[in-house]
Length: 383
Image (cartoon, rainbow, N blue to C red; front, side, top):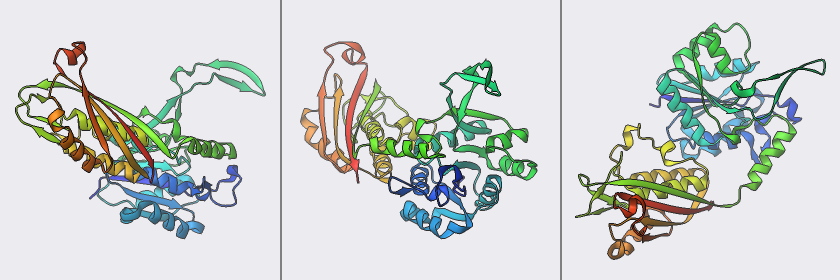
């Protein structure tokens, strides 16, 4: 049973957007805002129960969108009716969560471009701290306090942040906070803090802006328009030699070679490819997706990471075009196994992979034979 629940609030009227339907059902470049939001929610690493809170007038539409966005995972997405206020809607979402859920994220469907990596970041922070977690970005503009159009003072912006969603909380504390709330709050973190619980921040994402006005909608469409149908990514990984370890490189075992140190099998070649693919698809990096604190990947071989990464990339609507990777190291020498290595990686990635190797002419840690460095580039295109 999943321990993470994500409530997607899609019950807003969209008055400021000037739409003739609830905001979450307005299309952004031909795709409903809710569908785009769910695609990113479902792209997070850890399985979650997703509860969409929708207006009574659009429950059928919400269920259709949820089924389309979730595909084979449609059984993990539920749609419930919203309430008169945002707080009422979130409360309805909380009531629909399975008993196994321990961490709850609350997300606005209007933040339709929020990257999947932000959901994972918030979940990890809630688990690590046991407190409320909100993503934030620093305030860049100069802030003035005014009254009747007169500037009273300049406000120190160094301690100010823009707050985003998803906001994450331990479930039991959030449920209790909702039960004790006696007023309306602008976000769940304020309600949670009013109940006496601590709230901390993690780094937010620029793409997690809220679509509220026609200008915001145009901005979102421009962002999507800038995103080409073809994208590239770069990945770099470095590992030290470790004579006590066997060498796994490119998903292959290399007998009679010095191994590489690492949390998993130290396969720098596979790890660099993962980073390149995630970078190209806008899905973060291998550290954010498969952190060293995740016991599932302790000692895991490179093919495990590649399989998970390709699934994430394809789940985000991308197909891999090709990958090029270069090993910088004194050893091993790839020549005799290059064809085997390229064939194996091509099978794992599902697209052509070319491998080359070089040295650093005695310079740096690779020149001193202290370890290896790998650089990978990847090309992805819309599936």
